[in-house]
Structures are given as structure tokens and as C-alpha cells.
Figure 1 (cartoon, rainbow, N blue to C red):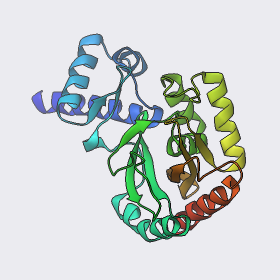
Figure 2 (figure 1 turned 120 degrees about the horizontal axis):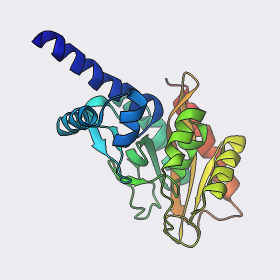
Figure 3 (figure 1 turned 180 degrees about the vertical axis):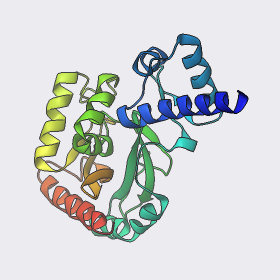
Length: 245
């Protein structure tokens, strides 16, 4: 009986991981209801997966895939390094900081950074975690996510204002995502920091968004008058990187 019990327990643990991978972060109650587990079973399995690094807690108190289960992004380390030469080329051309990031649960994570000749301290470093809603990287990825995953993330996504320009209303945020998908690029228009403007565009593999690249610089240099130059170069760079995969 013992081996059979262990197999059943493993199967239930895998069902939790598959649920979260397919539909995004879930709290204990939703895991219990969606998989038909009783409360004690759901709690025991989630706790075990959490303790062993297969799940991690989100800011909203739910559970998302942990490091051992993968972040849900299909952007691999090999692809990350392939993107380095074009990223540095873009940074050199525009003389501003260029970076690449992915979505991890309800946040963005920076995976590469290239400093330009005129780059300033933009708080961008490899491993940096940031909110999706005020990030050009986060918005560029989320706008092109498959609808089911996008809705799952947005449903529990907090939108705290960081500056007076931050979008903190869900209806307005959805309109922003639709605009991004229509035009192919995202802006952080002094939404994360006053005086800082960023332009981001999605990176694709097999027609699925896997990451985004962006350029960041002071709003005194990336202005409304020359913004189109940065938009064009960032979109071109993101396409160039996508073509490598």
C-alpha cells in the first residue's frame, strides 16, 4: 500500500504545479477547489512544495512556481546569452542603458543589462525585480501574453502608484495593454521614477512572447520629440533578437 500512496501523493503534487503553470498564481482555497482536494491535503502538499522550492509565495499571498519548477518563462539561459551581442549593439547606437527582462509570477526580472556611453544610474541590474504595471518590460510582455495567462495575472495584480504618472486603475491598465499590443511597443513614461523614460518591445520564440528588451534614459534625452527614434530602434532590436531563436 505504501508505494501506491506515494505515487498518488506525487500525482497530486504534480497537479498543483501543472495548475499554476497553466493558469498562474493560485491561493490555497483556489487550489483546493479547482483540484477537488480537501483542505488538509491541499495545505500539506502546498507546504511541502513550498519548503522544497517548487512553489513560492506571491506578494498577494498566493502561490506561484518556484525556482526548481521554473518561473513559467520559456526564456532559457542559452537564449539569454545569445541576446547579448544585439543588446550591446543597441546600447552602443543609442548610448543609453539597454536591458532584457522576463515575467516571473507577478513581477519582472532583469536578465541582461548593457550600459551605454551616456547611461545614468537607472536601477537596472541583473536579477532586479520590479512591478509589472509601471515597467516597459513588464507591460511589453504582458500585452502579448496568451489571453488566459494575461487575465490570470491581471486578476490579482496590485497597481500601487509609484509616481503621479503610474497607472493604478485596472480599466486604464487594460486599455494601455491593448494599445501596446496594437502598436508593438510599451512605454514607462516616468511611471516608475520621475525623470526616467523607458521604451520596451516584446521578444518572441515560436510566436510566443518569452521576454522583452528596453532602453532607459533620462526624460531630458529621451523626449517626446525624439521618442520615435528610440521606439523604432527598440522594436528593431527586439525583432533581431527574436530572429535568433
